[in-house]
Image: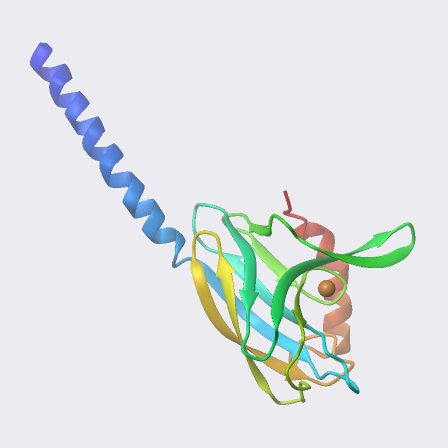
Length: 176
Ligand SMILES: [Cu+2]
């Protein structure tokens, strides 16, 4: 009896020791980023927005906490929302949570990357390198595909695609 409980305790400890590193390891490989795009900047604009879709295929939440780019002085994660009938935007101080099994879309009218102090204008057809930073996945590099000035979605999505994206936004309010 004594020997059996000893064996069980040892087995439980082995499982606990094994489980922790495996979960941490998985967290860095489970984010799938698609539809990364931006818009050409009109005139002398020094700021631009970046949009993308992040799917968390893993079993732990992650958090987009910031980013950087060689073409911008600063990159922030922003939220756009109606406030007393006025469209406003603000930085997400605690980052943007991506729950396991969920997909979060950064799109016009909602969450977006904000790039400040652009070193040069963005032109349609450019590929803008951005390094995102996630709490668990760490640094993830991607290229924003620059569309025309009035684009509402990535290449091929068309205007109606952009309108649909905006209607879907309430599903993605995974903020804390
Ligand atoms: Cu913004």
